[in-house]
Each structure stands twice: as structure tokens, then as C-alpha cells.
Amino acid sequence: MSGLSGLNKSPHGVVIGLMQLQLPVVVTPAQLATQAQRIVQMMGKARRNNPGMDLLVLPEYALHGLSMSTEPALMCRMDGPEVAAFKAACIEHRLWACFSLMEFNPNGNPYNTGIVIDDQGAVALYYRKLHPWVPVEAWEPGNLGIPVIDGPRGCRLALIICHDGMFPEMARECAYKGAEIMLRTAGYTAPIRHSWQITNQANAFQNLMVTASVCLCGSDGTFDSMGEAMFCNFDGTVMAQGGGRADEIISCEVRPDLVREARIHWAVENNLYQLGHRGYSAVKGGATDCPYTYMRDLVDGRYRLPWEDQVVHTDGTSCGFPAPTRLHNAGNT
Image (cartoon, rainbow, N blue to C red; front, side, top):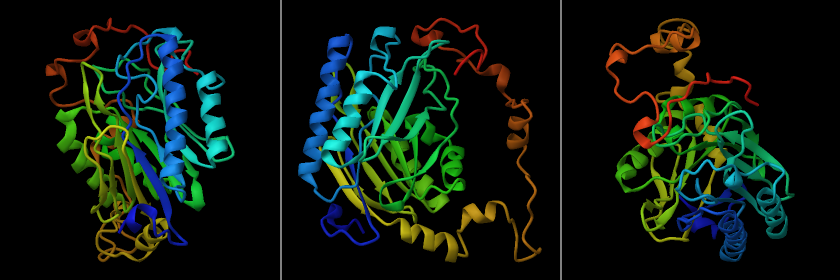
């Protein structure tokens, strides 16, 4: 139940707008500045479109487009003009909003960063993409973990970015840290449409969590992003879904209070709880060990696939990036 996109707002509801922003072309600093102003203008559209909206979500690459450029002149800083403009717009329109920016990294490749700014202009959530879409993306892997915050109207909110959502561990971490709503921003193109839909639904159901996900939309003359804004309820059902119309805002009222209720009262399919309490009907409190080899190996630094030596693509050379020589976290902040 979407509350007719938030037109019938309930006392416990959070109204979220997912903007299928037109895919921009950004290859110069001037174009970057122009696109930042366009995003600010679209925030005005969102507020006029739905006076009850609590949170607006812009897709990944909304500011930079899909050029994948790592040119320092195009990279953003948290104290730069783009973030300042976004803060001012959140204050002006009394609106929380989620933004995407490629962040300058003085010690290596840029970060693919997502931020949520509250309606007072403060950065409430600051996340760097943990799983760049390799080999296509050359961004530095994130080093801030997955923050979970108190979002609008008291909801518990998390953000992941695009390819992150293909790893069930990402959504599980969000939920384990208390997220009731997980945002997923993306720049995906049409070949990923089916995978996008099923992972958004699975991430919701497997974690009793609302997922709100949106891609860029339209063509930049080379790529065709797909839009496909999507709200999934905690039982995996689709509450609202967009298509391929650029700049359309898909809105939905979501109910974090019902997420909390399900997590407390569900028995069968309370999967997040049962993961750490296996077979509690047979043994008191359930089994609390870790039976998963991949988890133990990852923690111990010895993660290795049985077919590891046969994997063909292990760096970005197939996409024109030089093979890296620097180790992860070597001097990064």
C-alpha cells in the first residue's frame, strides 16, 4: 500500500520520492556546475510536486553522468560548491535529499560517494560505495562501512549504491545495524533490468526491510539508463514502480512502524533473527555458531574461490584502466 504516492499521508508514514533524473553529459567543470544547478531546480519541482514529501532520492551519477572520468577538475569535495548548493536547496525546500557525487581522493582514485542531507542543511549520512562495478568503474573501494542513521520522521535509514545491491551481504548489514528503509541509487542500463528488480525484492524480503531504489533515465547519446524506480515492501511485494520516463518522480508512503512490528512478531521467515538462532525449536536459543566457510575465510583474509585461478578479469585493463599496483588502504583517508 503506497498511500497513493503519499497523497494520503498517515501519522506513521514516510513519503519518499525517487527521481528518474535525465542522464546528463558532464565532461567539463562548466557542465558540472550546470548540472548541479539543474539538480537544485529539480528539488524545487519535487517539493511542488508533493508537499508531503519527506525525502527525495537522486540516482547515482546524477551529477557526473556516465563518462567514468576520474579527472581531478571534475571531482567534488565535501566542502565544495556542489555540496554547498545541495545543502542550501534542502533548507529552502524543507526537504531531506540523497545525492551522488564522485569525491576527490588525494591518495588514489576518487570515491563514488553518496550523502543524505537533512532539511536543516546538515550532512546526516556519508557513504562511499563499497563495491564499485568492476571492471567498468575505477573508483576506490569505500572505507566508511555502511552508516545507518535516524532519518526523516524517525525512520532508520541506510544507503547503498548500485552494484552494492547485488551482494546480499550489503542489505543484510544495513538491516543488522537497524535500517528499516534501504535506499539504492544507480546508473544502471537496460541489460540489468531483471537483476535490478529481483535483487530489490529479495533484499527487502530477506531482511524485513523496505527498499527504495532508483536509476538514472534516458540517453546521453551513448548509454541508455533505465529509470525503473522501485519501492519494495518488507514482504518483497512491489508497492510502486516507475518505467523509462526521464525526470519523472515516483513517490510512495512507506511504513517503518510496520517493519518494526514484523521484525518483532513474525515467526516463520523472520530470517534476520533466525540467521543467528538456527533451529531454536530444537535447541535453546538456537545454534549461534557461524557455519559459513566464506564468512570465516573473508574475516581471516584467506577468501579464495575453487576456480580462482581461472577467473579472466581481475583488473580494469579490459575497460582501459591501467593495472593498479597500490594496495588497498595504502595511505587512504
